[in-house]
Image (cartoon, rainbow, N blue to C red; front, side, top):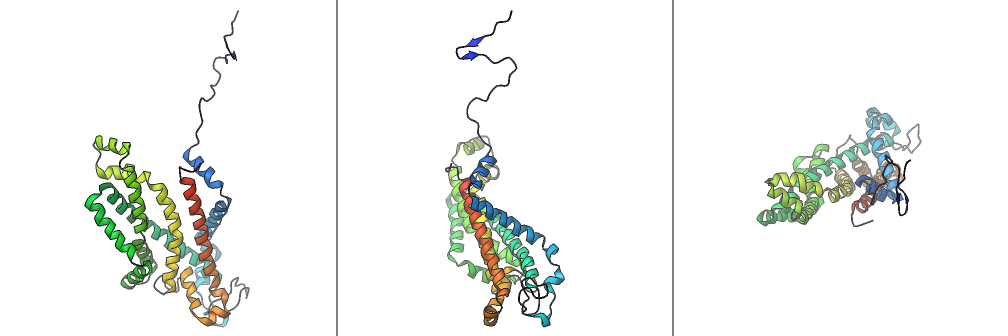
Length: 308
């Protein structure tokens, strides 16, 4: 004869039954991030549009060949959109504007991402060393940072381009080399708030060296705001590349970029009569930068632990 044990509130569950979770269930950081980010519908749409722009630029050879991009035909110069298969018309020497716009996006995005990578790398190194060691090291590095911040960025870019010469590689190096001060200050502030934490004290007590603590503990824990800053910096870098190329000191013809395609707008006749030669690259710069700023703002909100 079996006897069932009972609790004051009812019958005990049979042996072997799965136990119900006790206490609150927490989502993973990735799920929490996605839940917060997906609440911003505009940012989700902007992220999808950015992905489409990036995929289109990466697949530029599928949309237009190099011959379509660079081949000239003076008899077909300055033709309006739709003329004999030219979706966006032709430029002053008969090149297809649509083909150059697609390939130009590939160049501009590559320059932007690479330059941001260079600036983030320099900024992390300078900011981490400055924030961790403090003292005279911090003073020296921050004064160098202040010098870079006190000089107009465009002036530094023009001087750098004049010294190294205009090219895609030099444009990426120059923009990355002058854009790191903001990142370094951000990383320094994060390191200053982290270096007094218990896990850093424990690592020091365990005999960990300074380089190990910076590399394994401090930098990884300060990356969330840095990634948000990097996202926002891509838009600014694309605009800087456009400025340099517009001035003739960035990407050089015949290689197209959105910036050097805008150079056509310096001609008053082109500006007033042939809008299709400068408006599409100008719109793409504006639209891409706007989407990046929207996504970056949403990323900042989604990674902020103070927001629920």
